Image 1 (cartoon, rainbow, N blue to C red):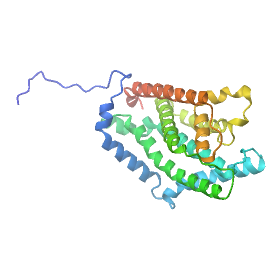
Image 2: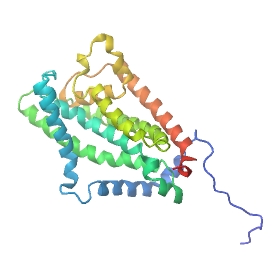
Image 3: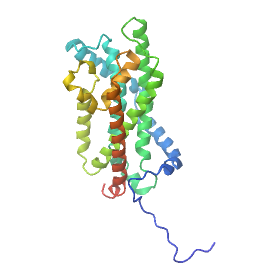
Image 4: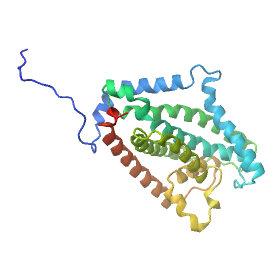
Length: 283
């Protein structure tokens, strides 16, 4: 085959940051699976307990919350045993916070790879969000075990059959929301490294502002708007309701949460695609 002398190939970044190349994500699905596998194996490599830390970390936090907020502060849990009340909130919150923390450092941790190899940059945060699902699955099994125990013990724990349908939707919304925030923060931490510490502090503060250690039913009516502007609040309460039989949040609050999740995801996605074209050269 004869090639013309004036034949040239130009490789340039995608100029449209409003367009998502879904075809490339599908073509590089093998890389996605490899990164998920690597994240899972590397995270607890050379540790004594390995994947057991998936269970130990939330359980230890649950014990601390039970002692401080349950025994000392006497915070009400609507008659639900404090252990399973706090664990239900921590299970879904831990998945969210871990995804946001990890994804917010995408450009920092993968700068060398981004500058040397071509692949869809969105593969990395997608792999992190997916690999954290494994830890979430293990913690979910632990939560189910506690729910079964307290149900058989006659406590005020009443798992809802509808949870089979609602739970996957709640996990999906949490993943999308965490991915949106992670993509948004990643574009900023690449330029300003100290924001990593601010994000960690912000997530810790956000946890206490969310119904992880309390129920939204205890919030005065004049502060109900705080639930609507916090997309994680309805997720946590509905997640807890699936397992414990506590009240679900109102349809209005749930719709607001879903709308904010979609908005934040697309804002983060567009900002991430806009940043990926130039940030690698400045890291």
